Image (cartoon, rainbow, N blue to C red):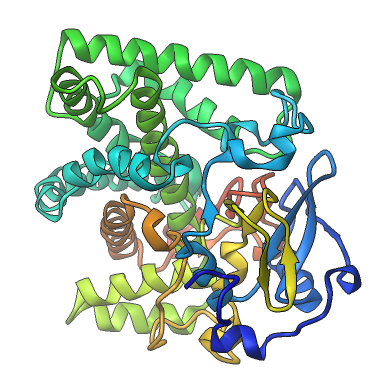
Length: 434
């Protein structure tokens, strides 16, 4: 339902304070505490004006059902070129968030263009193909867990971000896309650069140039040496129909798959491991249930993690085509609306008074961690499968694993977007004497 038409029940119940009564909240570019910041945003109201790095103005919607209405509304755009701050030159090319904003792919396209760019990816990532990928993904996970075992013999501390959560998604998505192994380290650095909200201006410019340089080389390689991968598939589509994909759209689509397919799954794995290790009662329940129904059990862990600690804290959501009024607050045409996904998963209006608690038995886990509406993430099925298989393998091999440091001392990623930690040190086998 368009957000400015007949209000939804949730909108009618919401606070209808005028915009000039709502405090403007400056978002922390270091992402030091997504959930503390989310609590302040929620307390400020259902629609809150915020400041992004560089004092760039935007809006955020703090109620699950209200944002879902916006994500499904035809009266808002995904095209960053419609943002008033871009059209007025307020945002320079070296802005720290440029890498997450100025992209050319399905994420920033509307209508028929969005469908044209999305269709080749959804046709590639079918349920059948995911099942065909499952044995290979299982093998990759097994290899990583086997390597972890070398750290388990003497109660050694190991960082699961570096040695578990990073290598699995990177290998999976690079094999799917068709990225040679030699290019993977630099792509990892480029992904980390665009997700950081504190990237200095000179690095922003260099990162954008490097993305097109590296991916251009990969496209050229797959033109000459096609394989059973997404890049080769998209190149074949482009050769068959010149109107299907421009060169920039081809590179942009590959970059989207690499960046989103890697970073979000890394954070999902870390957040799930952290949740289980800091909720021992839940971990016992998981281990008991996994004996009889492993698929359903680990699926529940993944979904509850996505809800309570979404891997993407915030994301540039929409730009209204006309003035829209949400919960009594008018957002002018061309303003930016930010989706606070890690906030929305804990919305008590939607998930109940205990929405902040991690509970794999929760009956209602229909969350927005992968977005919503026509732009819902097409790779969600792959991420879910990867995470469930990886978590099952890890906790089966190391059932007594423990955090090596207090949870409160873990350092978040310096990002408005990524919601996870820079390192997750654990002792895999604490029963073994040093």
